[in-house]
Length: 417
Image 1: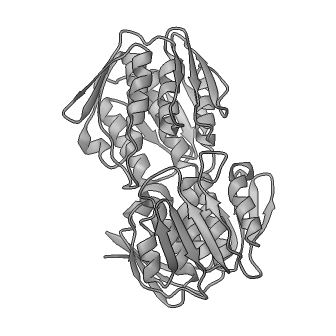
Image 2 (image 1 turned 90 degrees about the horizontal axis):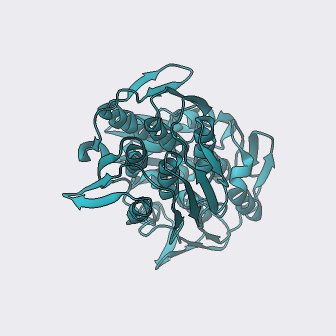
Image 3 (image 1 turned 180 degrees about the vertical axis):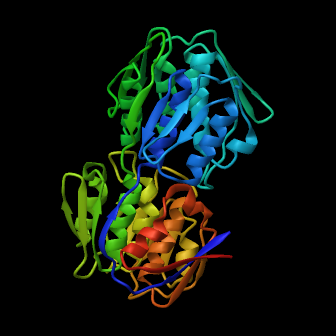
């Protein structure tokens, strides 16, 4: 198990390129199950979660080939329809194989998923949608079993917006008989990116990126070549890294339109943000002002950026209120920031942050993926040495983050615990 040792106080400067989006790559990989033709995906990040999905798909019978240019997946030889607990337990996104398996093969048995400990994220909306499409659903020993001779188009209204639920049912509907309408669908860019891939495979999907998605089912889908969109959370993390260290960083290979909520908050805090076509320059040459943040589904402020912005607000002038509306238990990084001298009080789903003149390096422990990034950012700004342990969480969702920070001048070292 590795840990990161950070000697803070260095202003980050230079240029960094972001990787493909983990949360777009995972559903795109699951989509290979919808066809017996090869799917080639470019810009797939090399991450723990990606390796987990590859292992799961390989177990099902998918052939995977990795080159410098692309990850190619071919599901022509699928003969297994169960996603076992040992492969699903570490990652919630594994449930994305459920819809494609039922749609193409008429059956699936998938273990109830795991993932980061940031509160309950039930898949009941996935299952209710599949039932409306004619699937028989049962629960047995921690497994979901689904059967259908062929799924039927249906009108499905989500009680709350769900990204993986929207993706799962959109994939399932692509091979269903008739038209499916998803109402109150998630609008995230990763959902839109999956729809682009599915349409390249021959699906008929309209409205992705809005709250109403219409899918006209087809008999079969074909292969496709697709480039995964840039990771907006990694982009946002580097934006905060520049701000919290008083640096000047240019982020390339990103899509600024996906970061408008973050850019707006940084502007409000007194941070300079300059947008290019596929780049962002972020700099801080003065004091950072405290701002209030409330998480919302896209296009609101992403819950996956809440912990990183809290690290920035810890050293900002004045008081900030950060309200988490998407997930329960997503303030577990607070206790670790307190160890570094932060002044934070949590009341229900709100964190009241009083800025302090400086943070002090300390040994801290990551509790989940985005908390890992938050603690690293705090360590970059702190005086002295910060040791972040349990960074296996980080490696699930960030490709070589420590190496990229090194390239910007950070004093950061990875060592074995």
